Structure formats: C-alpha cells, structure tokens
Amino acid sequence: MARKKIKISKKNNLWKQIAFVLVAIVIIGFILSNTFDFSGFKDWFKADPEPLTNDTLNVTPEEPQTMFEIVYPDGEVKRIDLAEIDRTKNEDVVIGVMLPTSGEFSKVGIAIARGINLAIDEANAEGGVNNKTVVAVYKDTKCDYNVAKHNFAELVGLRNVPAIIGPVCAQSLFILDDLTNLTQTLVISPAVSNPRTRFMNKYLFTTYPFDSYGAGIMARYMDFLGLHKPAVFYVGDANYGNYLYDRFESVYEKQLAGRGNDIVIAEAFDPGEQFFKDAIFRALKRDPDSVFIAQHGEGPELVKQLAQLGVRKNIFGTDSFNTPEVIQEMGVGIESVTFSRMAYDLSDVKAAMFRKKVRAYYNVTDVPHELYTANAYDTTQVLLEAIEKGGYDANAIHDYLLGMGQWSGVTGGLWFDNVTREPYRDYQVIRYDNGRPEVLAEY
Image (cartoon, rainbow, N blue to C red; front, side):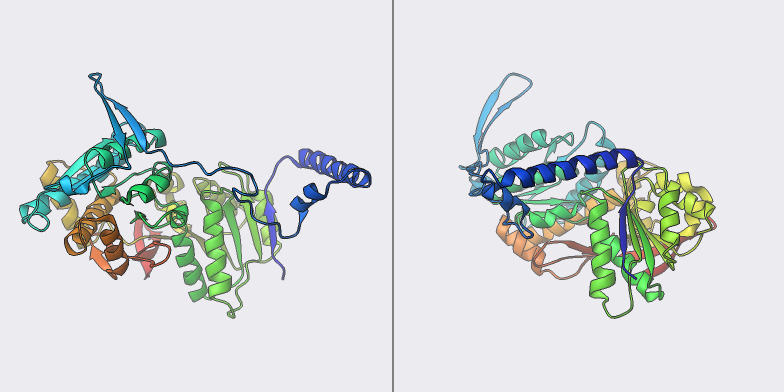
C-alpha cells in the first residue's frame, strides 16, 4: 500500500485560498511568458535545479572574523588576532571550557562543570597528563552564540588552547565552525545532540548521541518484534523531528529492506500541537500494526488521544520520552510507550558508584542532571587520554578520537564514525512497569 504523508493543519480554508492564488500566478506567468523572456526565471522551476553556490548568487564568501576586541569589567581592552596564536607557550596542559554558567541553561552548565572538574582533579592527583598539570579555563557562554565567539577568541587567542570542552547549546557550537577550522582548534561538546554537527568541519565533535540515533535503534527493535506496518507521527521541525523521521525511515525501509517493512502513513504535526484525533483517524484507516512517535513535548497528549481511540499497545518513541517532565506528566500512561535511551541506568551499580563519588567530592546530597555530569566526566577523560596518547594538538587529538575504537566509561561505550564523527553510544530499549523502567533490549 502506498504511503500517505500528511501535514496536519487546522487552517484548511486558508490553504485553499493560498492554492487558488498560486494557480492564478502560474496562469498569468504562462500568458506573460509568450511576450517576455523569462528563460532565466524558468530555470528555477527545473525538475532538478543546479545547487545554489556563491558563484550563482554572485556573492563573495565572507571571511571568518579573526580580530576580536575584548572589554573587561575594569575597562581594560585586549585585542586578539586569531591568525597569530602560539601554542608552544603553554607549560601546562591548558584546555578551554565553554558552558552556560548563568542564564536559562545554567543548571545544565553547572552539572557539566562538576563532571569536568572531577575528571581533571582525578587526573592531576595521578600525575597529570604526561607529567604536566591539567588546567581548565572556564568561560560563560550564556548559550548566546555571539558570546560564544568571544569566549573562543579569549581561550584560543589569549590562552592558546588547542582543545575546548563545550558548548552546551547547538548554535553556540555551530557558530564556531569557521573559527575552529581557521585556528585548528578541536571542540568537543558533552551535550549537543543536533545531527547538523556531522556537516561541520573535522574539528567539531560531540559525545552526546544525535537526536536521531534513538530513531534508528527503535526501527531495528520494531523490526525485531515483527512489526512491519507502522504509522509514524513526528513533529515537523527542521532541527529535530525531520531528522528523526528520516533516520527511522532510512533504517526501517532501506537498511532493513526485503523484510516487508512499509511505513503505511507518516503524519507531521506542528511544534506544540495538541489536537491529533483527525490524524489518528487517518492513520487507523491504513490498519497499522504499530505507532512510532518522534515528539518534542507533544507526546503525552498524542499518547492520551491514541488511548481514547483504542490504541494502547505497540506504541514506540525515542529519548524524548525519557525525561522527568514527560514521565511525570504522563503518569501511568508512560507504561504504554516503549522508547530508547542512552545506556546510563540510574539503578545500575556503575551509576550508583559514580553518584556516590560526586556526592562525596562536592559534599552534596542531590546530583541534578546526573547524565550530563556523568557524560562530561567521560568526555573529559576521553579528551585527556587523546592528549596523552595522541598529542597536545588538535589534529593529533582528532586522529586519536577517530582511531581509538570503542572506549568505555561511566556512561557506557563511546566511539566515533570515521567520516561523519557521529558518536555511537550503548543504547537501551525500555518500558516502564509499575513505576520502574524495565530494560527490554540493549544495542
């Protein structure tokens, strides 16, 4: 049965009006084309148009900014030229750290800082790296990409660091694409999960699994269960939901081709959407044997409306269901969803030992955002190992990370794709039962 891919909309009349206007424009354009030469304009309507380049747009590529002026609170001004850095000046192993330690995401930034500090202090207690003390220089990005650029300039231009841990927010990472390439500075984030990272230059890494990674895991798990006719509901967000749908479809129908897998319908919905019944009715007409959901906060209401229409089993999702907020909002409803998560089980002995270590080191009782703390700890250990065994140089670190194979830490296995630098992590498929997560499969 052919797939039907539909975009949910409550503005049918508006779309009809828009369609009418577009048809009118095409007709008028056809009439005018007999009189005027629109040959250049018609090229835009080719079935397979040439990709836009700086040449076709007559645009001169913008050179990355290399000169920065940093004004300090006491009025001191320092001018930095990133084209003139000298990394031979560092007597210690100096690394930069860019995190939001103030603002909306400060709690996550502070949780990550705890993991970084712990790993560095442990390394120094054992003699440092190649008998050199490890020094971390912190900068507060505030999750503002303009601030991040200046943070980078200070760390690279004034402290000559070859490697930086962070940032947390994707835009703060992406804005560094040209600068990291220009200065040959490696940046490794313990938190960014946006798949666009793989399109950036070779010096940008992340150790947190891509948002879409869990979608591929769930595609394999659903195929393993013998479910071959799913309906898919996904948030139509270019930075999130579309990536998840594409990954699910690619694994389910292409990598697992020949197994009878066929997505019977794919329904995209707007971010924040709360009305799904029309879409569910359309899906039920296709007689699916399962449901896959790629949501970003809309999932609880979607699952609720599925239950109201009689769908209470074979519902699958990804890591976005594995948040305290979603689990609390759904209550017992979370037990109807099977979903993926990174293999950091809070009830596991290894996780319990790490939690105990953090509590003792910082003299605290709670470890909020524990996964971020643990992954930052692992990220720092990986980076220091790369410096020790590869070299105190961005290219040496890069080569070591891609060639190290599977590395094992508190958060499980970590290894990188040799081409895309995508981080591969140990994953679990879980479902809640009587308020506790039950691990159904491991990948």
